[in-house]
Image (cartoon, rainbow, N blue to C red):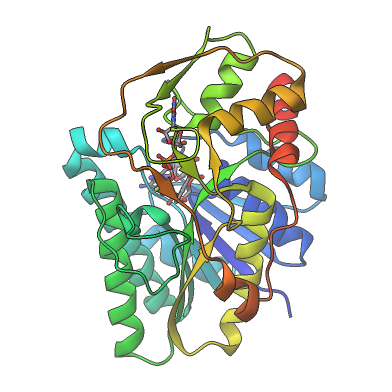
Length: 332
Ligand code: NAD
Ligand code: UFG
């Protein structure tokens, strides 16, 4: 039977793509977003593409009453909690805003769920909880230890939901630790549109591809990696959001709390990603090597075996396809 899923922060990059995937899989979607880092447009496009109505409530995910009414009015049966501030560097400058927004939205959402009698919860966590990992690929059992306030909010919320699930066996809770989502829906009509200067590599490469910037600054080529540049596990956004559908659908059979990595299990360097975009777009992407970025790590790749076997989910798209889809969404 289809779920009615409240996606907090659902107007954002991952949320809007998740709405598409949920609707396509036969579920209904309700969104609460305050549009601090998004616009309603992406959800309008999702409605057009799917022919389905999405209930969009403009409001703050720290507002327990608003969330509770939204859940009751729409007969919500599960929640995916994405509302958060997500810029690592900014979180070092503004820790109070990050701890405030990210912890308060999570606690308010859980509080509202308990009031409304909704017990299925999926949390947008991050590979950043692994900090500087001892070895790669990283299994879920690896030690965690975030190295910045943003990452600490993810780590703290994971602790809160683990303890909550242990306190009352009606809760069914999953943390999804995302690696590096890139790309866009195949239509190119739902884009990643960061407000202000992009922090992440793919949006930065896209701004160079579209001519908005001259070159990509590569943060160090003296890392202990094959070509000296940072290695990450880039995952096509549509693969990532299909992982959310699998997680929501698995909750019925799950007891208590569990956690899954969502990644491809393949490492790609900065230079390899630039080359993939050049091949996909036929455009030259100039770059210049500069100093390492504070807080960066050499390598971060997932062991996705657990999600593959337990959730029955696998990535099917390549970096070449993600590069092509990212470009389509920017050039459209
Ligand atoms: P995004 O900024 O595009 O989306 C987050 C959404 O949350 C935005 O639409 C924003 O307006 C909304 N929001 C923030 N605070 C809110 C509040 N108080 N009330 C209501 N809405 C609020 O980011 P995204 O990339 O789509 O990320 C979604 C989730 O995934 C976040 O929790 C993020 O931390 C997590 N995540 C993202 C990445 C990544 O690389 N994009 C990696 C790991 C984890
Ligand atoms: N990089 C550059 N130039 C840039 C931007 C990035 O060389 O302009 C390099 C980085 O040094 C790193 C790689 O590209 O080696 C990827 O950097 P991103 O900023 O795109 O991604 P991170 O892996 O640093 O962090 C991202 C999110 C975090 C999240 C983490 C794991 O920003 O929030 O993935 O999911 F926690």
